Figure 1: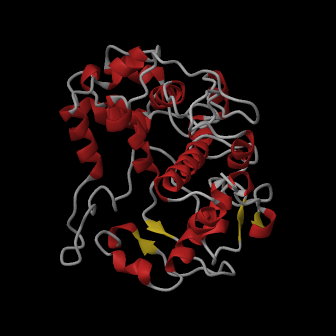
Figure 2 (figure 1 turned 180 degrees about the horizontal axis):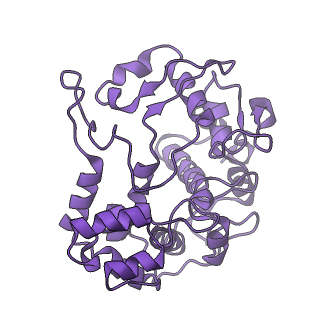
Figure 3 (figure 1 turned 180 degrees about the vertical axis):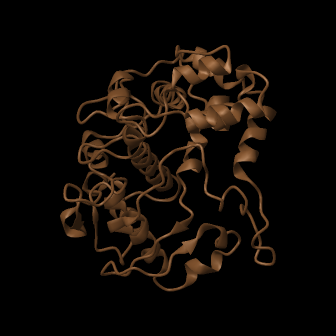
Length: 332
């Protein structure tokens, strides 16, 4: 895809590199939000209702006019050190592999991949894993994390059963970063809070059995660390995660968009501004189209790769998925 893009440009050296980087940045910004042809990752994580309430849904047409020079787009401590690590709770213990006709191959245990990059050099492995990932259901967000991360992280071939515990690392990182406790973030997000463990249990925001465990680990509800409580929160309707992490994540994405002078949808007079044709082309791009365009061994995939294959989300031929149209860049 990059080679095709380079050939479509009538510019050279640093200007060509900048044009390519600008386009790839815009595609990536699109894929972490939503597109007109499919709902992608972030709306699935936090839910469509919250996306609309926070005005985070990427426009289907027109330009974004919400840039605010006073908005700080830098990553917050709570986002980087806790909330956006929620993906650790979604990781499965193994990767599925599938052949070109979607026959099942041997699964790869996650703990057997650390420091073993030689696997990707085997012919067809990348395509087999990508096909497997698009057909494999993700793990629901909950208080438990796979033992492949909670005991075998960064293990070595010589000591495959000895590794780090990622949850422990996340908790210690939060403390090293000086993150306030879970209840402080509930207050910050204007959510209900508890003063005692009995009150916490009555709120029904965490599983009862987890609250019982927390009473043995912490002296006070004020001491509960953000990460373990955040991944364990009971999700809201239409969301994969609880309201505290949803609050932190959506607030961050709001500021990333509103505070970014170079956001790809912006309506400004900067040299980095995309043309209307370029913007329309990028809005049609999905992870599915990127897989089809970049992997010769991928011949079909569901239009939204983040949704499980079903009657309503079937695999379709790559020829039926629109690729990134590079015509708007020709002759720049």
